[in-house]
Image (cartoon, rainbow, N blue to C red):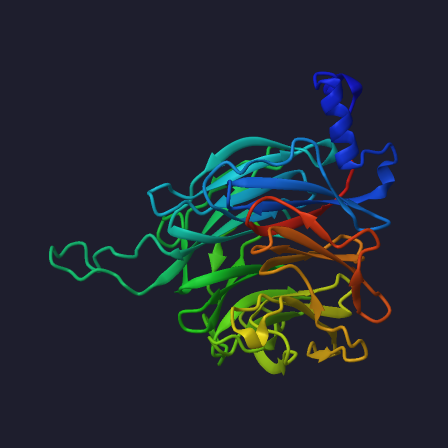
Length: 412
């Protein structure tokens, strides 16, 4: 930031902003930037992450409008120059869209344009590791509700509850998405299983978690054209009662299973990816901590040593706490509870819905929907324990926060 850019701000306001944001000339104190969505006022909140303490301070211009209604999910293009926000729309008829933001110096965001995708009830957005493609998951495909045989006037409507993925190519210079048609039917979507809720990308594979039939639906991603190809085994049954999330950790896929609608601790299922997208092998389920409740996300450290499970909790008084359960990752991908620290599972803000680790594996953060806070924890590289940050672990954020994402400070 230069003086000429902030010279337009009245001096009194400038001083208060500088004090509130903890502005400093030492740029190497920032290890990365965090953006979190707020559904209450359709906003994006931006924060700098301090390298030495994990402390969060707001970026200039934050918060700003999300570019749509009911923002629920966001994704970064590799390199961190462009941010994509998925706005779900609402019941009043406001349709969902994808908002594109460019990322500037100091983590500032500049709105560029909004785009629409095929399908209804969008729930997830992600990019591939190359930054060439963007994927949007919809709970209902464009075929839902349409006549099974359009040539017959009284043909029954399609009610298979299948979802769909819209695929976009991303311009390397502007980040702008362009829809890719399915080469099989020349439609701008690829169908997946029943009632999909989450989607994850691992190398050239794309997986959706389909809660309608408790399966994982795999696709192979064409590196040259972004086409999604269904492998020979189109679905993998999880044999779970209530799968709530799908996460990638190294060579393994982790599925959290709430196990009960009454708020039990649930379990975490390990699925081996194998050598190709259709070689998923369902492995062992590891029990969550008895004091935890409603696990909804698993995340592993970048070095693959530890895994953390976010427990959303319920209104059940027997499981009233929102927590993070800590595990070590075994050689076969199975999780082993860290029992040496009696503080495990670790308390976080009420109703966490999203979790991320900073690019240096030092800090873990949750967005706490009920509390409208962000919670930060320091990760022990030696033992995997979590501890409070030295300057406080709870940070106010945009109202009713949804998901968050963290980008490395690359100095752009």
